[in-house]
Each structure stands twice: as C-alpha cells, then as structure tokens.
Length: 223
Image 1 (spheres, one colour):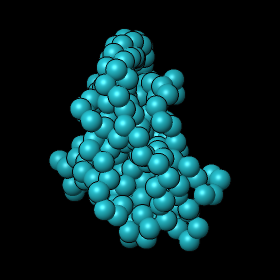
Image 2: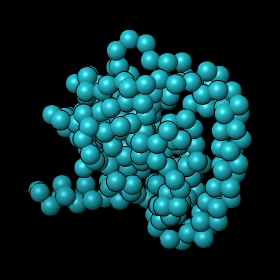
Image 3: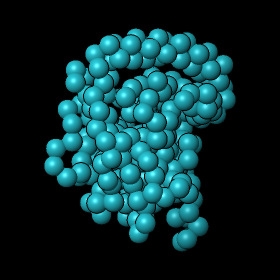
Image 4: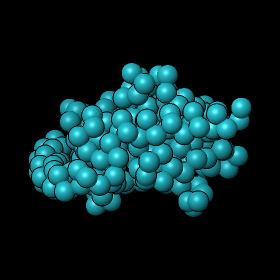
C-alpha cells in the first residue's frame, strides 16, 4: 500500500468547480469516478489537447476507505474492456458478468492508466488482432503511469486541494508535439510485438470462450 496520505495530481480541461464529486464519463478506464495520477506529466498529457487546462495538486487520505489495487495484467485489461464498452456485445457471457461487478463495493481503485500510448494495442487486442501475450509485452515497456480513482462520495471527501496551476500555451504546444512523437514510436514497436506473437497466447474471443467453457464445466460438476 502507498504512503498515506498521498500527494496526487488531477488534470482538468476547465477547472474544478464546487466540491469534488465521483463524476466522469462512464467509459473511463475504471468507470465513473474522480481520477488522479501520481505524475504531473501523465495527468498533463491527458488534458494537453484542450485550450485552457488546469493542473491540481491534491492530497488523498485512504484512512477508512476500501481500496482495490489492480496490477497490470488480465484483470486490468478486462476491467478496462468492460468500462470502455468493449464487452457490450458479450452481455450474456461469464466474462461480462464477472467484470461488470468487479469494482463494486470499493471506494478507491488504483491501477495503470490506459492512455493514448496504449490505446492502439488495446483496440487490436479487443478486435482479435493481437494476442494477450503480445498485449502484456506491449504494456510492460510503456510508461503508463499510475492512477487513483475515487469511486464514491466518501472517498472524494478525503481529497484536499493543495494548489491549482495553468499550463501556458508554449508548454501545451511542446506537450502535444512530444506526445505525437512518442505515440508514433510506440505504434511501430508494438506492431513488431503483435506480428511476432500471432501464435503465442490467446485472442480476446478465445479468452471469452475459455471463461464460458470453464463456467459450463463447473455447472456440470455441481450437478
């Protein structure tokens, strides 16, 4: 577990107005919540495409909160897949049922950020163009950054704003250029990994079928 309380950062496209709430798009990595990162660079990267973003330094106290630390791996991938809507056409599967409830009951989720640098690889995995073995290799060499997501009002009440700052236009332009360059380099590297692992590991549909088969076997064994 991290030190407590923890210093974190939040990037906002227009600024925090009023009290902090567990609100965001439902399609974010870990669903609706208030997202914070451990690095100024990573949170700035997420909002640098906007015209007037603000960066907040925050303090989060985990005392009394139910926290789930989600390591980078299969469960992280399937949680992100569920929250990004990738499993919607698989609503009747065991995999969907498990991960639709996976984060229930937790106040704070801690895990890697599925940022623009990994988006292409995740999409290929979900579209059965990349195996899980290739995806995990791609994930391992990327600097994704860690995020803390407050999923409940109880958790949000434990957040204290320490400071607010703006990103000046010159910095924004430089961030955008750097981001574009890094993504181009990563796409090339991940394509090499994808092609070299087409026969290693499982594709997304095969993983879903595996969950279904195991579920049926368990039911048959219980009868």
